[in-house]
Image (cartoon, rainbow, N blue to C red; front, top):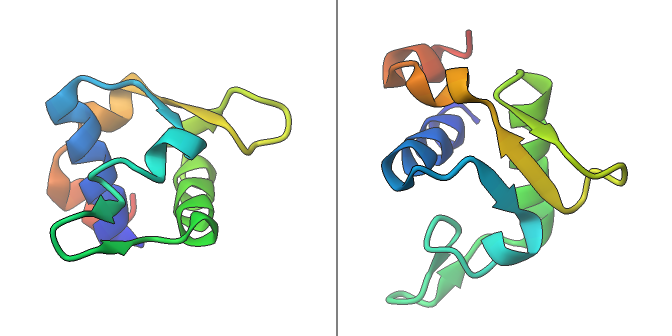
Length: 87
């Protein structure tokens, strides 16, 4: 999960994105590689995003915890080594 955490937060930092929509993420290059026709399942994306929420890097903005996440500003400022270690 550490690699996914680092990848997602680096992606958000690079694109200056501070919200993630689960439905839109299904088609995002973050989870969908059209060149090789591979994509992560919705269940896998949900598990990764739930882990990010549990570690305090994102927070769900909808009550069902199924739609939109806010990426916390401090999470995108920390370095990749910190993210991989899971602190």
